[in-house]
Length: 292
Image 1: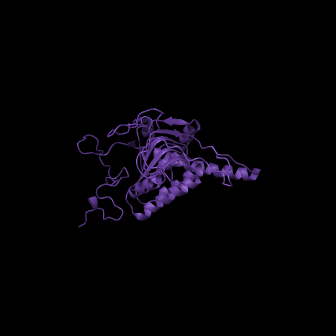
Image 2 (image 1 turned 60 degrees about the vertical axis):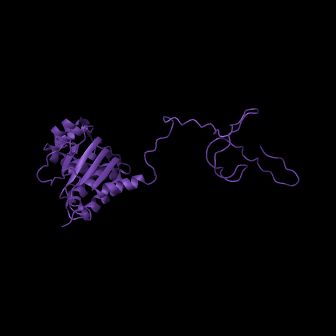
Image 3 (image 1 turned 90 degrees about the vertical axis):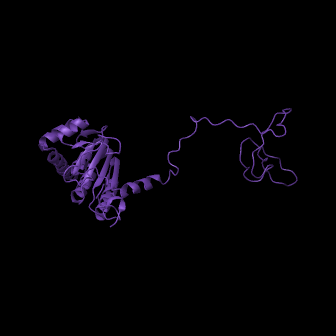
């Protein structure tokens, strides 16, 4: 409500009425300072006697309380990805366009400049545009350290070329692979459309040729499977040659049977994680940072 103008004073609102709840009143008011807020009572309702505390407020239902997973929701993605990069793990998900491919290539080149220790490329629910996938495939061809791709979710289209460009390939149990032709569209004059169509055909030949090379199959068979959008489960992808093995848990103390034997040539770090003897950022390759 607004008080009417009287004797030249400007209009101003009434002060807020007190309401129950712990904590101090913010700002000036009839009850400034810390302490519990007074509870309004109906006329004739007796107050608490001497030595009797105010009735406690009912506890909030845990089912109605909001969940808090990250204490600082503004900075957790950057800090989390930095921690992953410190462990030489690169995460890629969603649709890989030109900008995302540039960032991914920058991360891979940064890790390559830091050393030749294994790199793990986490591919989760990944699709890709054809030029972007070819850009990442070119960087993977020149990275010195062995790159292990760990695929999870749905990997489809040109993203399979990124998978094929990695030295080692493994799949999580829930992974699905869709070998399909990428969708492209052209706009412009007849000459421009014909030129872009020829470029797209050359990029498709590179994509299917890389998949055929990894799987040991003919490029024509791979192209025919892509035309009918062939779907692979993890066992089918292993049989086809898209991945080498199913990802398993690393050996843990007291849990026999979880340890995966190291393959020859991967230095015990075939899953991309750092292990004994692997090169550590700022270290000398000893276990737990020990020095001679």
